[in-house]
Length: 227
Image 1: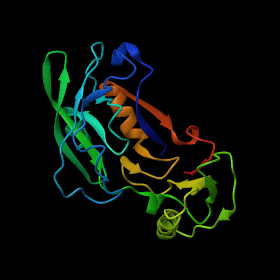
Image 2: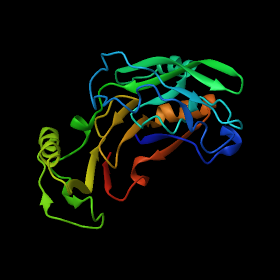
Image 3: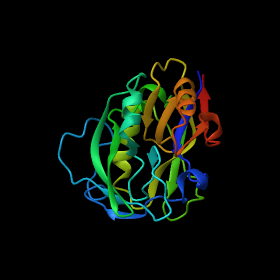
């Protein structure tokens, strides 16, 4: 079964009203807290309140440029719809969205708690190397990564470097045994939310708005997918 990255459809202005639906708002803590890359968010934080642009249309998936890729904003009815599918464990937070002279209260911040890079990325057969912040074209020495824990420990070591960081030549994504309809990854160039072909088809049949899909093999030349 094929998988697709779920994205905001910024190109369909007729549907969304404008390319970026919200560029301002009350940020809350969304940019000031280092949220965990995996695991449940078990602390309170000030929620964002997006201010929609004048021409924007309230779509099922709402785009607010100041909210990171770690979260999505969905209409509540869409989250109810997802309950009909197999979804990795997720959390939601009710938020206020300012639209013209009204406040919309039927949106929620959405996050999948446990990204699946440990299970789905074949680190041993992927290729990594050292890059430089000062020269993004620089290709340094190859770095062998054995597994996800080794990947994390390598990132930790490189945190002490002023100019070096880990880059990817090739990332192998093994989707042969995935059994869920929606999951999340955080590792570049794969960061984001993914849906199964079955869920994608159902979303399109229901005519939910503001969404676009890219098949994984079409996303980035560095990605190799095993189906």
